[in-house]
Image (cartoon, rainbow, N blue to C red):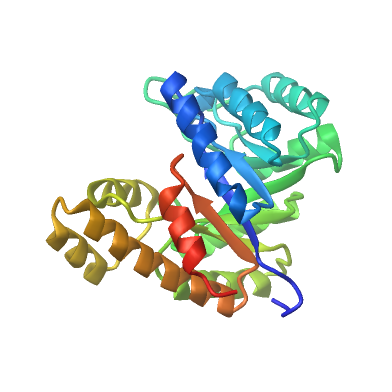
Length: 280
C-alpha cells in the first residue's frame, strides 16, 4: 500500500427483523458515518430468506448517504430470480453487490438453485449487467470450512476473481499471518484485485466461539483462555477485545492491507472503539 493511498473502511450490517432492530440499524449507521465508509454491505439470509429485508435495509442506508452493497446468493435461486433482483437494484441506482454462493437453509433439501458456485454467479452478473456493478466476493484466509483442501479453496477463489470480481472481502480471522499468506498465494496465482481483511470485534465470548466454529475461523488458544477467565464481565471482555482487534488491524494496515471491513452485527460501539485507537 502506497503512503499516498489512505486505507478504505467498509461496514457490514444485517437486515433488521422488527422496528426495534430497524431503529438500532439506523442509530448504529449514523454513529459510524464518522468512519467515512467507502461503502456498507447488507447480508442476505440463507436461501434468500431475507431478500425483501436486504433490499429495505439497502434503501435505508442509501438514504443516510451510504453507498450500500447488497449481498446476493445464488443458492436456492433461479436465473430469473437473480435477473429480477439485479434489475431492481440497477433501477434503484445501486452500483455494488457482494456475490456469494450462500448457504442452504434447513428444510430446503437439495434445491440448490440453477447456479451452484459463486464464480458462476459472478459470471452471470457480468453477462446480465456488464460493468454496471462493482462485484465483491468472499475470501477465506483460513480455508472455507467445506473446502477439500487449502489448494482447492485457493482455486475456487481464483475462479471467482477470473469470472469478473473487482475485489474481495475475507472471512474474519485473528492471525494476521493467515491473511498475508493468503494474499501472497493469491498474487502468485495472478490475482491483482484488492483483498480486504474482514474484522470481527470481540464483544461476546460465547457468540464469538459459536460464529467461529460455524465459519472455520480460529480463535487463538491464549485469547480463548483469557476470554473464558473474564466470565460474565462484559466490560473486561470488550476492553480486551478492543485491544486485541486494534493490534490486529494496525498490523494489517502497517503491512499493506488496502483497508478494513468491519462486521458490525448492527452495533457501533466496538468497531468505533477500534477505529478510534488506530494510528493512521
